[in-house]
Image (cartoon, rainbow, N blue to C red):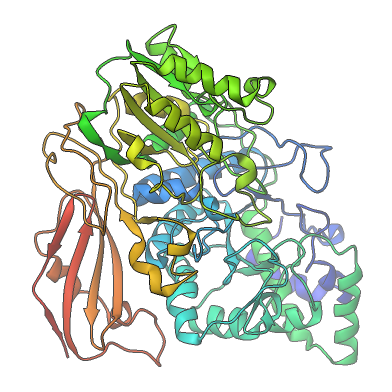
Length: 633
């Protein structure tokens, strides 16, 4: 195996054709080897929240089942923890599993901004806020890379929808592009130094990302100092020669030699400078030298990883409503579990991130371990579930009969077909059958506790009054079932904080109508312990939790902070992330230490902090504090 110091020597020995071959994959998951010079193939694999390595002999497109791997909660769930330490720990676990399978680069994390709640891949992304997304994704990437495995942060850039993603043209002015869409990647590069970035399918201001020199070279490398490799999303190349000149290094998957020949011909005719080719080849060789694994590592504790997945699921849950102290449950004696998702869990998204879990907990079994014989009714069918054999009307009738006079744990959510890579959602509503079930149960039950499984925002205003408590579970990974049981019984506390909108409907989103933005409900969520009872969350038109005291103080009851400055001119904001164990007594002191780039929002010579007074504010899970104004000179 060669070293980085030997790369100049290898470049001199490679033929033009061999150089060009190194810039595309040898198959769907490997880079091209050059055996005569001892250059091996490097294996990459999907894996934003769990490794998805295809088994030997599986189909090339990756549609068949992958090797077993720990399925952690998706990014949308993990973002609710605000916990960079937890994300780093999950990253280390992902690296261990990648090394055990001989994988050198994990294709993730996905960090695109949630511009619209309809994006089919929102479950795989962190947040609507670029600062929160950047901090958490940087922690995950740093954890992975601390184990010697590379990451491929994706999708660079402005890939914010799935429908027609191969042809979309994102028209964005430079300030918006830099402050909102690019700042996520900038923050990750600064904090985690990822091995690679993956360019997106779409165009940005008429130029495809895969051949956008301003994006891939001027901003990424010359301004931000990125020294890694840029690879394509699978099939994102449009003009391979233009891509090499722009700074695109590796095409995936293999073009079976077609684009290699085009690049070689361009060098021979002078249409492409060979120095551009050599630069990309050197980046590929550097990636291989750093992350190729000769033999898989065998030291792997999958039991510990499952427990980490369970812990992450508990810490991702958000309590949205809790009237009449409905939670936690003092016991399970009068409880009935309703909803097929309790037995057939919705625990991950569909598409390239779909994981074959090492084991899978479901909430029904976990609850029955605590109370054997706990009654259950599916209430609605799911594809390929046992309930699919029964008429929907019969399932609804049986569920209502079982709910009479009891406390109902009602499992609702979005079916897998509603959220996936490759297409966007058409609405943000729960299935009509789920809402009908809630209303039928509400008429006869003593209490109704709704437990939601969904990867992205759903509308709640039309049905939330029928629930005594609502807990958002997201897509909680393979340990989600046990996590639910611990949460509803009070063994764990839902300590996550949510900064995503509760929407009255699609018409209320800013993406659809700016004039209706005031109709959005914003909820932070709340965990309970003896020293936080009675506090209130900040937010507008919120669903307010009760003052119930959770019996077990949450082990991670961090008061999570997103601080911001309001500065002249009006509507000019800058934010910074501050996960805290307790409210800072002097947030203004922290603000003073912020660099002008933090205040201006981007690091570019053309933008700088404006003079004037800055109001320092902070938002936490349990309240809001303000500090005196500051003066910027």
